[in-house]
Amino acid sequence: MLPDFDKNAAYIWATVGIGTVSILMTTLIVILKARAAKAALAKAQAMAKKDTGT
Amino acid sequence: MFSWFANPSRFMNLSNWLAPACYAAGTLLIAWGLWQGLWIVPKDDYQGGDIMRVMFVHVPSAWLAMASYSAMAAMSFVWFIWRHEVADVAAKAIAPLGALWTALALATGAIWGKPTWGTWWQWDDARLMSVLFMFFLFLGYIALRAAMDTRQQAARAGAILAMVGAINVPLIHYSVDLFTSLHQDASVVTADGPKMAAVYLWPLLSSALGHSFLFAALVQTQMRTEIRERRTARIRADLMAGG
Image (cartoon, rainbow over all chains, first blue to last red; front, side, top):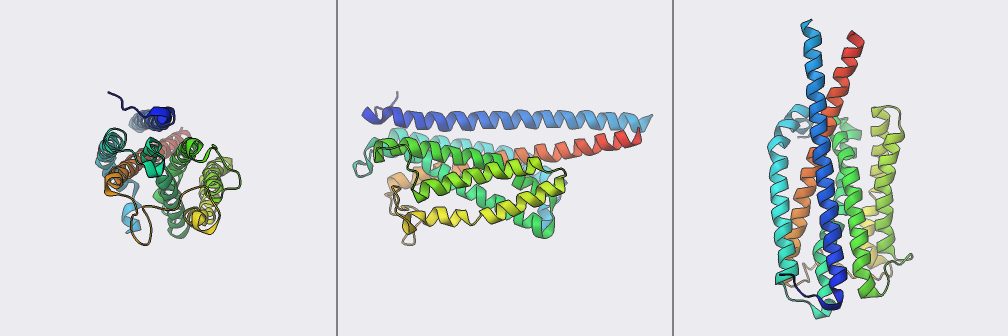
C-alpha cells in the first residue's frame, strides 16, 4: 500500500520516479551495449582464427 | 599498486565477478533505503514535513555526482602521470554516468526546491550553479574526447579538462559556507559529525552506499565494453593489414 504524503505527494513520487526510471534505463542500455561488444569481439576473434587457419 | 590494476586482463577477471556483486549489493541497499525513507521513517516537520523524503534520492545523487567527478579526475591524473590505459578507460566510462547522476541531483534538487524555497531554480545561487557547471564539465569532457582524431589525443585533452575542472568539487562542497545560498548547510559531512537523527541517517547512508555500488557496477560494465571494443578494433585492423 502506498503511503499518503498529502500535498507533497506529487513532488516525492516524481523524484522517486525520475530516479528509478533513469537508473533502470541506464543500466539496461549499459548491459545491452556490453552484450553487443562481447558478441562483436567473439565474431572478430572467430574471423581471426579462421584467417590464421587458412 | 596502479600497475597491478592497469593490466586489462586482470581487470576483466576481477570485474567478471565484482560487477555482478556490486549490482546486487547496490540494488538491495537502494531498495532498503527507499523502503525505509518512504514507508518507515516519520516525517520531519522541522524539514518541511514529508517533502524531506526527497532527500533519500537527492542527497545520494548529489554525493555521487561529486564523487564521480573526483574519480574521473583521479583516473585522468593516473593516466597523465603513468600512462596506464585502464585508467583512461575508467575515466571515459565514468563521464556519462557522472553526467547522469549530476542531472539527477539537479532535477531532484529542483523538485525539492519548489515546495521548500518556492522556486525550481535560482540563477545566482552558488551551490546550484556550481553543480550545473560540473554537469557541463562532464558533457564537455565527453564532447572533447569525441572531437579528437586519435585515442591518445582524446585521453590527453580529456585528462587535462578533468584535472582542471576538479577545482570545482571543493567549491561545490563549501559553496553554502562561502556564499549566500538557498541550499541548506551540510548536515551529514561536517567537522562535528552528522547533525541528522539516526532514524534518517541510516536509510540515507544505505541509499548512498547503494548508489555507489550500482555506480561502480555500471562503470565496470562500461569499462569491460570499452576494453572489448578496443580489442575488436585491433583484431579488425590486423585482419585488414594481413588481408
